[in-house]
Amino acid sequence: MNTVNILGVPFSKRTLSDTVALVQAQIAAKDQPLFHLITANPEIVMAARSEKQLQTIVDEADIITPDGIGVVLAAKWQGEHIPERVTGYDLLIRLFEEAKQHNFTLYIVGADEQTNAKAAEIIAGKYPGVTIVGRHNGFFKDGQEEALVADIGQKRPDVLIVALGAPNAERWIFKHKSRLHAKVAFGVGGSLDVIAG
Ligand code: UDP
Image (cartoon, rainbow, N blue to C red):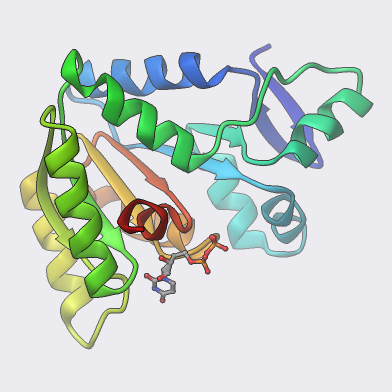
């Protein structure tokens, strides 16, 4: 088995490198449905227990990575081994770093307008293998959300990152999953703020 079940959440036992390789394989694959990756911390595990819709989102995710040492320790108490944490930020940076060999298109949703624009500028400047095909801040006004979903669906990015905070990002991806036409989508918490500095 490639997963460890912690309170109803099947956590991946993959290392960061193996997870990056899996994402790259999804990007390379053709005609696959959107691959929803969730980086889950103990808060999401607890919230899913009391919130039915969140449990459904977790159940339907394609991979759930251990975001936090608490998850790694919980696995240990069960006599299982999770090699390391796999956070959204680490995953993102590794994908960017390896974009020289494995280039991809990226759509960035989330954070305030200034942070989103700055993060996009920094990523484009630092990682030429990453082509940003679209971006939008995470504070939608009336009507903007519908137009955004349509734009993502039309641009068909390899990777869609959503920084709306957890678990809002996961809910948003799940809600629009069938219309996004991205190959891989995941929530990244405050990663855009970190990148933008
Ligand atoms: N965010 C957003 N729209 C919202 C709420 C939050 O774009 O309606 C962004 C926020 O600006 C930040 C990111 O979501 O860039 C992560 O927020 P937070 O640190 O609260 O989330 P967490 O790290 O707890 O997942």
